[in-house]
Image 1 (cartoon, helix red, strand yellow):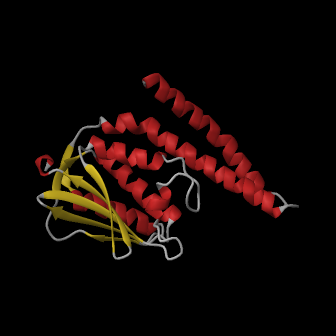
Image 2 (cartoon, rainbow, N blue to C red):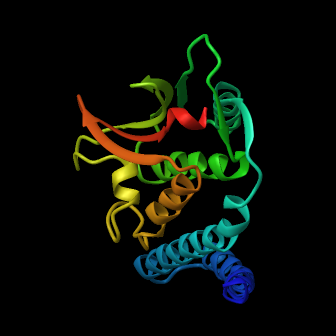
Image 3 (tube, rainbow, N blue to C red):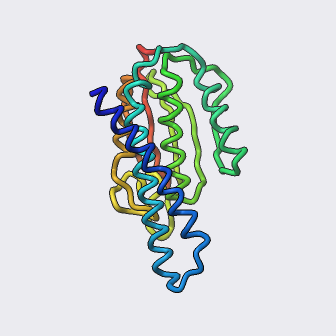
Length: 208
């Protein structure tokens, strides 16, 4: 398994450079056929997305075996919110006034939230909301995305449906999120209410 992961990481790394060169060349090319150039740019974007997801899988074993920490989830979500806001992403949060202290793996959980928010940004309208709630004693970290009027889907649902949405996907995104959830012995629950799609990561109370 380790040999396979190293090979996957090496191949992915080697492919990034020619893809970047191809993207730059297409950007500066004086197109005699704009439709063909756009099609090639779309192919490059799709390949880059696939490579990014393979990188996630290659790093997965390291991140799910990292040590547990016990800390306030409000602080983690607040840092992530500030990072996205600095790049102009409309990420809203509802954290409450009391600390939400649980045991979690900081790198793995951060990457899980990144995956959800990035997918919502890439495939949706960028209007994303993160909240922390209690449900029957369990802690729920919720990432919500407004339904899109034309498709009646969200950035999250489009990202996790293979070949659907603005950018076709491999379906790896949902697998990655599910594996990060499993590393926390947490469940990933999908729900919909009042035109909003929500993915909830539910931590069992015995982990807090």
